[in-house]
Image (tube, rainbow, N blue to C red):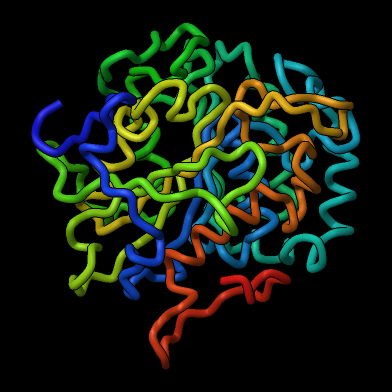
Length: 357
């Protein structure tokens, strides 16, 4: 790849990225109202969990590529929520209303949130019907004008792009790395849905910024998360700059972590091209293979596919206290400046672990 479109070969990524702490990247000029999240597959299920449970934090909205309903795996076997199954959303709806304002943020916030959903008609891993149920579920709380549902004809289980990337999969095949040229710029479309057509066109040349690695440990870590994660920071959002920047969280799917597919999700999905021209930081949390056995709502299971947790594997994963959600939220709050300068107007939702930050 040309210029500073950093191709992070797994054996040599350290020469392209500096190991930093998220605190050191904080610009104190990140708009807290600009925070959004999107994810693919298990990352899509996680994006829905974050968007619903932490709706006070993800004010710009949330996007789900090839994911399913919120709370799908709690009261039914999680496999019902995969492989074109027929999960029920009735109990999840009851749960959502019961938890609103307690275990999760108030569902009333969803009326103000932009929600983006995408699925391929040939997806045989999750399935178009299951993703459609997410739209049905959210229709109870969100304004129809704020929800966009895109169907990609002939697309299999893949994060859609409109460019060819080295090592990507065919659009009509559900196979690693699950990133494919389907003639649709998924990253661009979800970001435009959140932030509007006022976004500048994506970059076409070398990127101005850098992909940094950071330790995903301590309050930023959890079982099933890797020790290292990544963040793309455009030049205008780096230290000493005055730009007011946005923040987007991009979540990969099962098997798509850096240790498995290298930098493909970081680079080939296209998020950074849009971020570079629009003063946007992109956070890339990372999972890891976890062969330990943990109790889930569907029985004792390992996380050998390195999935983000939506099945109750690491705590109550559909509540704000879920281990993976807590870690990701801690990353977000660190970037937007929990240790912000005195007098800052940045507001944060009140969380039981706020004092850790």
